[in-house]
Image 1 (cartoon, rainbow, N blue to C red):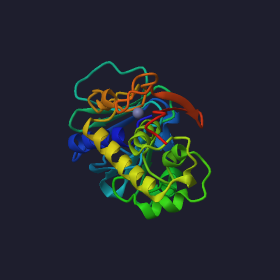
Image 2 (image 1 turned 45 degrees about the horizontal axis):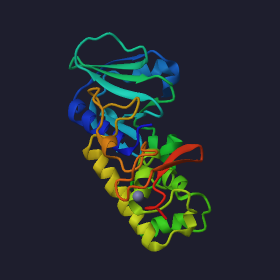
Image 3 (image 1 turned 45 degrees about the vertical axis):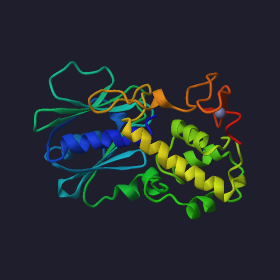
Image 4 (image 1 turned 180 degrees about the vertical axis):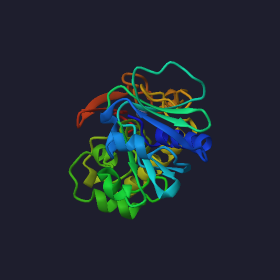
Length: 275
Ligand SMILES: [Zn+2]
C-alpha cells in the first residue's frame, strides 16, 4: 500500500500539473470506487469545478475545488493516479476518468477496488464525513513529539510496530517505513510499546522523520502497484535497511536480516542492531 512518501510524491505531482485546470467530465466505470455521493451525482456535480489546491493528510489526497467543494482520494492497496497527456488505450483496471479542460485526463486505476474517491460540496466537511480523516493522528513531519508519543505508548502491551502503524496515532506510516524506522532507532519491532524508555521514543521519532524525508526525496518506494503520476517508480527500496532484505546482511553489522509476522504483516529486523 502506498504510504506517506508515495502519497506525498503523487500530491506534489498533482499540485504541479493540475492546479488551475478545470474538470470537464467525470466518467465512472466502477461504482464501488466512489465513496460519496452516488456515482450518478459524482459524475453530474464534479464537472465545471476548478482545481485550486492539492494537499495530503496521512495517506489521503485532498483536492480543494472551486466553490469550496472538495475531491478526496485514498489509494488503499492498489489504487493509482495517472495523468494521461495523450490519448491512449485505457488500462483494464481503469475505474474513474476525469477529463480536464487542458485536454489531459486523470485516471484512477485500481486492480483490487479498495481505493475510493469522494466528492463533497461546500456544505460538507470531509474531515467530519470520512472516518479515517476524522480519527487521524498527528502528521509525523509536523507535529510528532516526545510528549505526544509517550502518552500514546504508556501502558500499551501491543508491539511497538503496531502502534506506529496505527493511523489514529501517527498519520501515514505503514509496513515499509515502520520496519525502517525501528531499525534506525535500534528497537525490535515486537517490543511492548509501553516498555520504551524516553531515549528510545526520542530516537524513534527522529528515525520516523528521517526515513520519511529520505523516502520523499527518493520519490517513494518501488513497490508493486505504485508509481508517480507519470507512471515512474520510486527509488527508496534500493537503499532500504531491512525491508524486503530477509537473509541478506545487515548494512551496519553484517548479521542476517530476519523476518517474522506481527499482526499478520511481514516484519523485517536485524537481531543484533535492534534491542
Ligand atoms: Zn545489524
